[in-house]
Image (cartoon, rainbow, N blue to C red; front, top):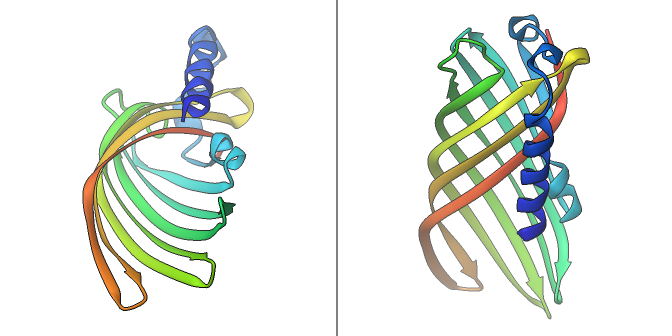
Length: 177
């Protein structure tokens, strides 16, 4: 978590020093695709597609995949989600944004012959800032908070889960029309 926070903070500081003149006219690119490079370091593939629906709004859809052996636990997870974003400065899909988000994830894990599965849903909000640089390079830094709930099944035992889930996001990608 500290590495992810450090990477996000470093990218934010570097981008803050880029001159405004280096930014493209924001309406030239209405779509973008980003990948979370910090997640790749941890075995998580997270891809997001965003499309502006007007100068003030966009929608985003995302997919996630995780597969890793952690301390003998062989874990696989996949999920999808989406969000609707509001851009107060009318430059969608670039600049400051905020809006609601919802996601689901399916998790399966095995340990010494035992297995567990779970399905989780979350609903919450997100905020961030997206830069679209000349040439279409995209940098997206954001944070989110959600309420997650779901159920884990271990054999015939079912456990309910619910709670607050905060998160940080970093996306690098490409914008196009």
